[in-house]
Length: 81
Length: 156
Image (tube, rainbow over all chains, first blue to last red; front, side, top):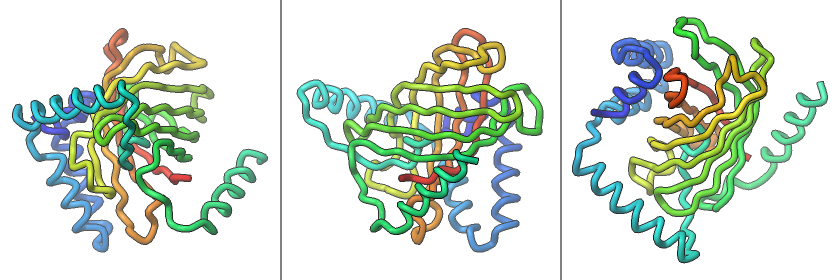
């Protein structure tokens, strides 16, 4: 399972269609092609059980910090989606 | 017209400020989206509005949004949380997994319900760190309706 599949399932759009759209965007925007290809690679990366497990452990630890009033902000572009 | 003038004033104000400070708790952005929710290839609607976020820890943020859909004349909002699933130290690209409650002035068009979501955010241009490209897929728990959004944000 990777983010591309999650997005595909959530939106009801086939994976191939999303990838084709991104590849067409890379072809149409040659200056942005390296970044778009990197984006395709990243959303294809598997969300392995180990990664999800590590993520869950980190989130649980951070929720405990938040509950004790220890706030450590981090800027993430996806927070504005 | 007044709304457009306000937006222009905000953009001018932010254009004269120093580069955006990173890693602050609260953040605000204005944005525009295409949304798909009726199984057509063409966008179901176009929206304009804004987002707010409160980053509480490196992986965990509270998020919210308010948007107006021009085609169907609706106001919608959302509030919830998001977990960052990628490198928390990469300021240019991140993936998020979360859940939000959606509310709407037109529930028959944009239902009011809880919906888990997966999101992507990307700052493609280092010379324009305030510009963010975003995409989000969500799935309504009550209606079983899938929604896809793709848009651009300008962080204030």
